[in-house]
Length: 436
Image (cartoon, rainbow, N blue to C red; front, top):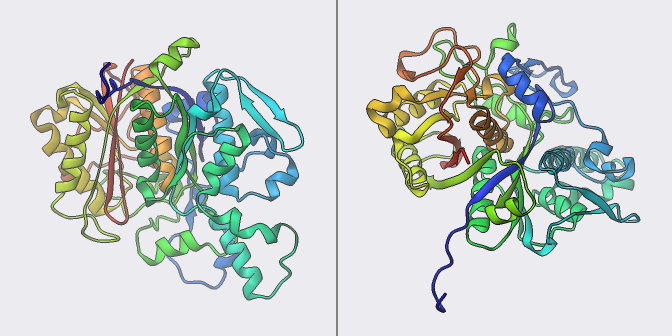
């Protein structure tokens, strides 16, 4: 190859999945829960809420994994924020699922190495909406109340910063390639995967741990839940929590706050094939745009939603007719679901009725920065199994959301699929996955 000639883009494969959600932990249980239409929404009783007048009293909390599931000791777990615990647990699941062997490297530091991986060619790109929110709330309370800040509280600052999530993963496994946090609210997980994909495609890395993480339902000051409630974005269907999140339904009244993590192992084709890895899907394209309109509202024109999907599909060198499935951002808000549906009709035109559309948020709630990671896992599993889950809680489809919304689990041709994420601040991101 002549000097200055761009290297041929490398193909990028999804080889490992690590879902940590309100309905299940781990690939097998998660996929089973999706096909069963299981919901993780329930009444949430938080100590801080006593005496407060707020609308939503439901959420989709995650059962915290034990420290050993994250390759941590009990003492180490005290020195990381719960969001970091989620990141480490999801990563451990994804590495195991990818068939990558992990061995102790430094017993004193509890550091591991991933067998068969060049640590300088392996990176960590994780998205989060807020980062170590639990630690922020806890430490702020200690300072304001002038309580003792000895012990683990002394480490509050490095525990709460958003980049602690990928940094702790990199340190745990000695991964010395690019390591960063992507902090773009509800689009963070998808944008992190997109950034990792580009690094692999362009030859900067051979392997990446990527996805999204957020821990939002803490029992400290409830900042996330109360903050979203004040914005009137949450469902107040408190007497029927299991049916509260209902994307595209005429009776939807807001989203259910969720939490969790979705970690993926991405590898270049060469790296994956050299070790005989199982492949779920290929990351074929990605695009991101910005509304530049409002911090909390989507641009009503929908222009940037259309543009981001168009650009992502073109970047994958496929036509809209090759897309058979969309895992929609659809959070169960009145305006958001209708605007995304309208954008999808503009992108696919007459062929929109050949594209099955669902939203996993009906089961796991809106997991904020984790959403893109978890939903990319759902999209990869759907292609790998040639099957998509039904639209849970869709009882009366909204006429403004006319799409091919499956009421039962439906088979698909394993061609290509897209996963959408749209966020406060106008961040839009679309990921294209293709059957390998």
